[in-house]
Picture 1 (tube, one colour):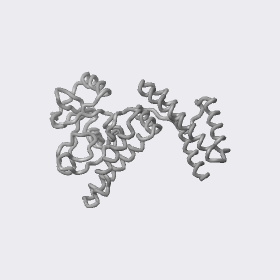
Picture 2: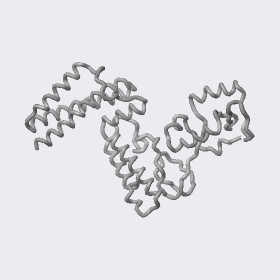
Picture 3: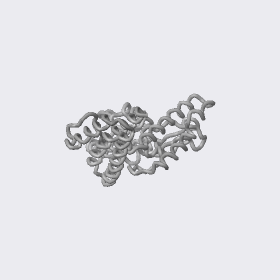
Picture 4: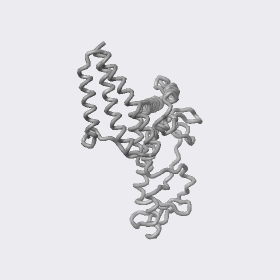
Length: 276
């Protein structure tokens, strides 16, 4: 029997599909057997009714059927992560450095951006705290700090730094933050699909865009920009309320509107640059 004590950290089956660190384990198990089940604190493998002389025992059909139904809810495959340099167990998630030898670790691309940036998974997060965390992480992970280190340390620092950059940029602005939160819930906003949009809203957008095209002064353009800021502020509050209540469809519709207004805001900035 393969004792669970030798395996360590419990993982969910979905994590095996999305986490690069655990992908190899899933592939290894899929080669070894067609099924891995938990029985009496041990992992038992079965493979199309065949028996292998590995110390594993096959389960009867009824037991396999029952455990198979449980596997759709959670997985009992376990993996313990270790430092690539000293071999010590890496307990923290995500792990930027090994606590034993202080060597930089490979990035956990399956980790949530909220987890990476050490903030609560909420739409109304503290952007000042987010920036402080970003600066702290970049001071320790920036590739310039590893110019005299080994090639592997340089490589991992580049990956970690890039991942922190991506997480920071995503969470910094309300639109990208909201879209990411939808993504975490398996939802997204399709590109170029206006068929379901409110005709009155589309008419409003056309009028705003026309007014911006016809603007001939910085004052006219700035006025439109100020209007967009107010609309975005109002939408931010509405989206926060919808996400807080778990109303994902409502949040999705509001984020679609925010996307349009944010696009106009960028056009205003371009217009002001042209009029300088």
